[in-house]
Length: 270
Image 1: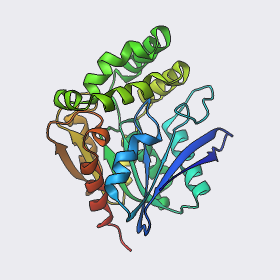
Image 2: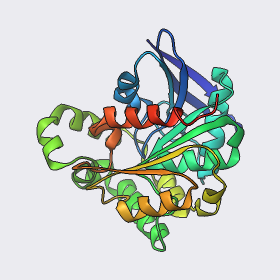
Image 3: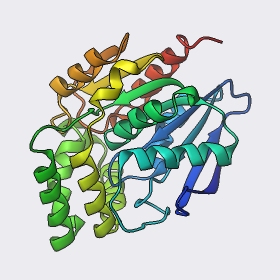
């Protein structure tokens, strides 16, 4: 069963979120999507988790049906938005997971709302995009603003999905492109700038909950060295490389992501 809701961020921004609820859910997980996606990015993962899980996912500000206020944006602000969504849903705490941009938000959430974080799932993500990140992300955002998001789709499709997956799943690939191109260019630019500025490295040694870092073998958006650095910096984190997978592993291999989340709760006390 899927239900749709709206929360309000601390600054008044409307935040759309959905919940997939199993009939006898034992576990709760809140999930944050990749750049330029929306809550339904996690639909296949929610299905793979099954009835033991209650799954919440939001449209981040600037995305989907949530509000698109003027920038600047910050990953800490996105983390506080997620806290507001959990408040609206009546959730005290949950496993927190995120992919790519969402992984940055999940790290920020754990740092700012540690008592509400039962475990941390970090997929195809990083704590820091590197020295050239501000310029790199500014260039991508400006191209989208000047030429439209469709100008980026050829580049994005090859980053998102492996060659064999694109060939076998053209419908899903085109659905993902449609979500991407529906984004507001100004909000996309501000979110790109946010990622260019993001640096969560100082918070990682303080993570005290079970954590898992997962990366696609062929992910060249947040490649294996970034994932290794992330896993090494988080005390006790597990690390896994998914063979033949690229950047959007929750879409390419949702059952693997569900299995990682299920394994995480085995390490959660109580």
